[in-house]
Length: 337
Image (cartoon, rainbow, N blue to C red):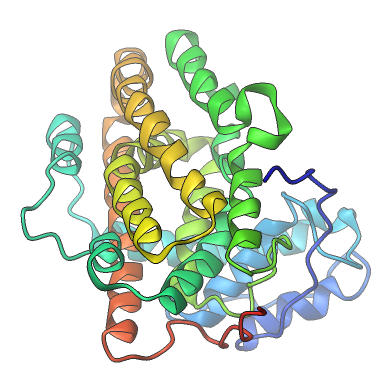
């Protein structure tokens, strides 16, 4: 089934999850300039309130929000407040990863597949149930319906072979020039095949902070030139780890007799990301660090922060599912016949 890609409609503003996100929502419901937003931030860096507040700010740089003027995108007061949120988030990430400058070692670790793997894709392949797969799809839609968009921000910040190689990877992500083959569109087809909505950010209210943080990291690195190395590291980590996990999820879906569009999204990534892994490692990171060796630590940070947040997400999902509980903030509606 090939779905005609319809126009993306701006998402509806969600409900607040605390005083920080409520302050941003109150601002966005009016007209800029913003009234004074909080002058300090004291909150859990990985918590619901801070992560939603960041997501609200970042989405202004993507598709925006329904009923919210585009003039908010660069409102100075909102940008100042976003900076406070970013500092809390970044400080926590930097404190929670080991850091260092061993880029070869960090990337090699990503290639090691443990014999007794116990991650989300292993769980789904071996004993996952359809309701868990649908939850996984809904949560991943927060990113995959804008797949590869955050990484496009790094293109003008690269030069030479690194830029050309990253553009080649992005060209594949965007369907090689075919709208129906864009990975974001393939994921939309996957959602429809699973009896879910393909509305952009349609499951934001269902998504806990542990999901939002994985997307916010990309936006944070994409919007700051100083974090260009980290964004390249994130992209490389994603490309290196996707192919084996996609193969496992595809097997899970085949076992469950899922719609072919659900399987196709993952089989597409098995082949594409196996190639992208080599391009990212050799041509993008290799050339970038030849030109700017001082970015080595930033690239390492991007890889490690990606793995940290994905591990936190995996723990959340498996912790809920192994207890027979939903991993969502709000349960999905029953699947229609």
